[in-house]
Image (cartoon, rainbow, N blue to C red; front, top):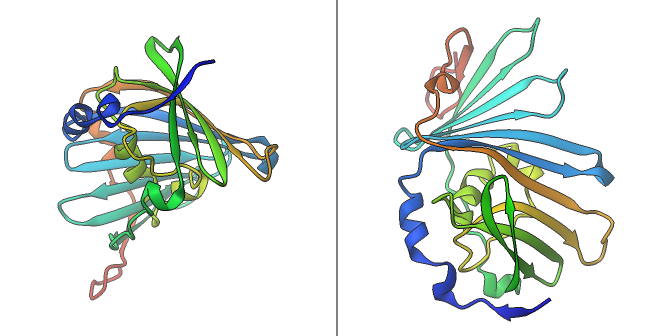
Length: 226
């Protein structure tokens, strides 16, 4: 298999600009058999809001996390059949910068392998760092990119960040990863796989933002908590 270092222009700015106005939805599946983790996260991306719907088990509570960029709030909504529906409104705290790739020692390689995955033309990219190897099948067909998804998933206030903590910031990776396989160097059996499906471009159904019927608590400083 041929490998070569990725040049900066290969995956760059055009998609970064296009993704800023991208709206749509998709399902992110994270699986780690060794840790007995399997979770589906539905992502809904609006111009000024994002919504994540997390389901870890059919019997568990369904959780939605709504991020409002204008109001600088994150709203947690939890509901389970037979239980009361509760919502918590938090102010979004400033996020610490993710360590730059130079500090993480990430080395990005492109292979000459390509294939179709869920009707997207993909090519294989390998990101190597001192602690893990990430094999990715990426596409340029979605007009969405890796940094945008990383920002949504890695908000430290969101539960999804715990499931996807192995997704690193990778310099110049501005394509979209349809499938990822993340293998720790010191524990190769502890493999995490991440895949994206049901990718639909266009404004999502706004009902995912609905808080009607929830008992809301405003947790922002100085707010009336109920």
